[in-house]
Length: 180
Image 1: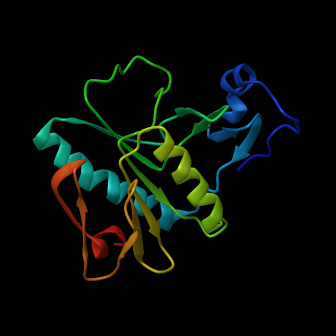
Image 2 (image 1 turned 180 degrees about the horizontal axis):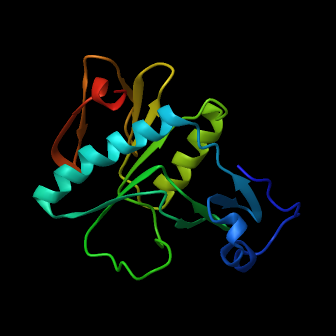
């Protein structure tokens, strides 16, 4: 990844207008470079997107995309997050530059340089803005941490299956298939 310009706090307008920040997140006035991982990360991201796309092609209740810029607001902040995979239900305008809320389902693939704490902070942002389900894929463990508001976290491992819960009813994805 190329180096970002050395900047202190910047405005939302600066963040949104500078092409150097296109693949970065924005948190409390600070541009945050994303750890994008490598080939394994990309394959997991593509696999997740593919399984969900197949489901949505049949069910026609929303769309799935990668790295969708999402503007999140709450408790005095405005943040821009770019989940690895985002599922948006309903009839959203495709002409908007970014989503003005959280996706309904977020898939984040943890990169080796991501701390679990930083990942969980992102999940809090998503949940505060309406997200209903998060799959946090942990490649080193070949497992998925499943998070939902007001529910105990659970982990799906090899030999188990992920489901779409109330967000994508009937979706079933073998955990093993995410890592091929």
